[in-house]
Image 1 (cartoon, rainbow, N blue to C red):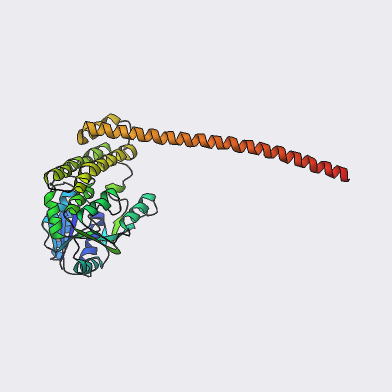
Image 2 (image 1 turned 180 degrees about the horizontal axis):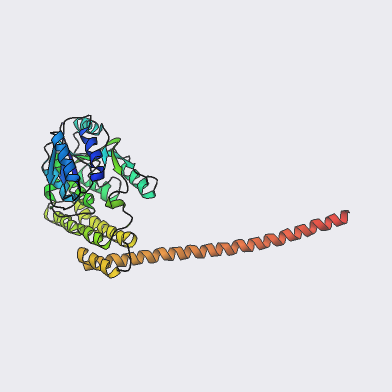
Length: 361
């Protein structure tokens, strides 16, 4: 049982040695390590080549910068192992990760083996970090059938849509990779790639151990703000959304595949774009610029519909707040009346007590 560890790498020089050490130092030795340099401009490439000279299991591939979507695809197509294991260039694996993966693969022969994740960093107590922890360390034990995987992942949001924390049969991973076009995608790359993986898979099992160590706060998914330029680059994922829709149209797919491809994926991509617009852009002064960029990437009709839906949602939320405020005002008035009555009753009782004392004395 040979495992191919795929590492897409772009400007991760400060973390790359720890990542590579965790892989080449695995207790399970029958692995190959494919590092795909995605056009790094720091010293990442040199570190990769250093490890290649030291360990014959390490291979270095290079490409012009195209994002993790293409980098993983490049590595997967070069894999020679029975399963592929993806890891980002700033994270690391537990020492016995490959050993546990290989053992369960031999036992189950599952198409996908999902293992747990540990959040690493200074912000592990943040709400978003806690959400990551819950989502990546669920309780689902196994899933049978492609449609059920798509349902549990994209509709129920029960299992994560990522390639890291998954070991995938190489023939499944290669069929998925050749189904997806090699286009630059810098955001939602896992979200899109997993769609193809699930479409070509029939069995999913959970390995209930936290084998993957994720540096929270390093990647784009946890950045607190982005520039308008970064936002424009991120929006290239709408080309990937179009490719997913075309895949469902051209291939003989099930109603579930078509539902996810034509409804769920486009809707989530728009929600992600609006999230960045509303919560992470540096400034709201350039609203015309970002709305224009979104309309250009996603289409004017989709953008208008999404913005209109957002306005309706915001109005409903505001109406709810106003109704809640009105209820609070009404409760406050009620309590004030009760307090007034209690004060009067207390005054009457106090006067009665004083009168009784006077009579007794």
